[in-house]
Length: 97
Image (cartoon, rainbow, N blue to C red; front, side, top):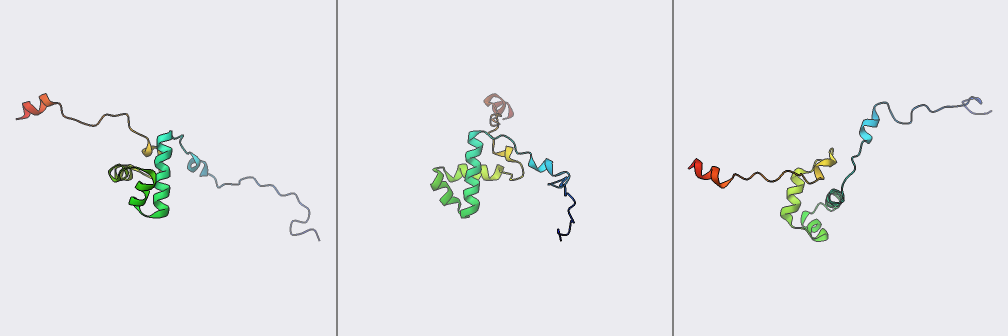
C-alpha cells in the first residue's frame, strides 16, 4: 500500500490564499522609524510606558506623542513628517486683534 494518494504526484499550486500578497507589503523603514517600532514592541511586551521610556532613554512626552500617531496597520506612521509645525505668523496675530 502506497498511501492515500496511490503513487500519484501531488502538486501544491498555492501556498498562500489568493489575495494575501497585499498583506505582505511592508514598507522600507528608516533607522528612526525602526527604533520607534522597537519602542512599541517593547511596550506591548511590558505593558508599561514608564519602563519603556527608561529602557530606551526617552521622555514620556515623546513616547506618548508617537503612541498617538502610531497605527500598527500602517508602519509609515512611524516616519517623521517633513512638514513644519503649524505656527501663525506674528503679523497675522496682530492684525486679528
